[in-house]
Image (cartoon, rainbow, N blue to C red; front, side, top):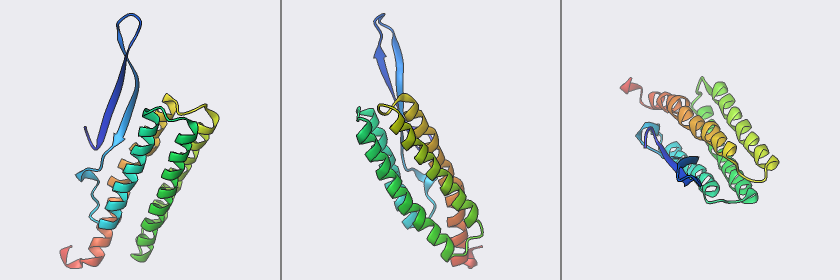
Length: 165
């Protein structure tokens, strides 16, 4: 594991007794680098990562198109819940970067929509789908939490505890 990622490489034997990589499954893991300091948001991030991992697990275990779509919709629903909670917190604290943060959330919603379209167009989850989840969901999530969400948490903590600044 590095930087919160857990990689699983599936190896298969070819007919010439050589091994080749088929698909790598990258599971997300909540670690100290993702702690924002806001208990509610950190708990939601843990839950969100669990839902992402359930989608990856579904694909890894050979879940079909319908099951993968259900898991992606489950993830999308939780994403809405989480983004609404974050944006409400930012509004309540008059966070100055709220519009940029909302745009990042909109970008993620679009990425999930594109994954949904990818599943609809294909017979089921493919290697390209796994790669898209890795890049557009897991990578995005880590970068977003470590930059935008930590910035919001720092701002809120400074407003609540100006004596610490």
